[in-house]
Image (cartoon, rainbow, N blue to C red; front, side, top):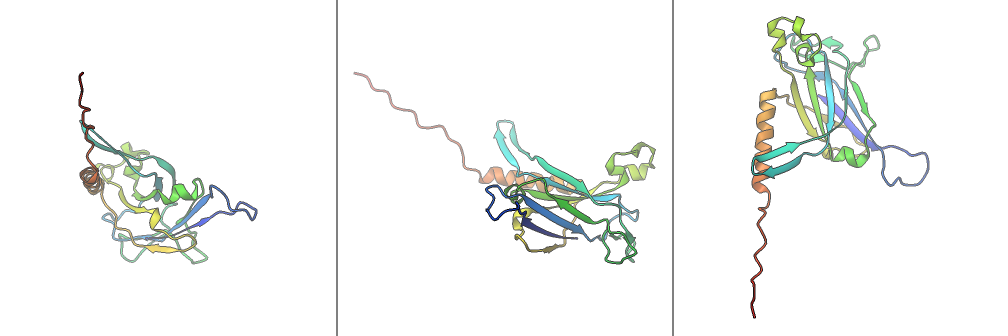
Length: 198
């Protein structure tokens, strides 16, 4: 689905930066075998920080922070398979809408983050959805995630990511949270200090 690479941005001198700026370049090539024949609006990229897991008496919660968000343009072409769409083309007469660049985070922040790619339809974008037919208003978005620490600096990585529905994403997130809670060390109270009398 995409090709990604990261590298250390130059600071204009020969000194090694103490907090190097990162850059993530991504090209969305195509989205294949979508469950809907209608073309999506775009593919959205969200870069999120590592999840913070908190366990209390009320259960375990997991929260993330979005570092940045951007998105492609609309598909430039439909594949012969009618439910597949091309976002990037090398043909001179076709404008490419699939290239994305992230330059708003340090290299350390990027490598601790997760990329979430979401295929967005008109009904899931929230803009003017009230005027759409009922079937289109109920159309969900489809997403895939990829931990950026799996990338190598200065090397392009080609990926095929499996998209999930919101329900499947929630089930996977719940399973991951439960697994993290099960493997977390138990917090026990320190032993009481015995009292002495004279």
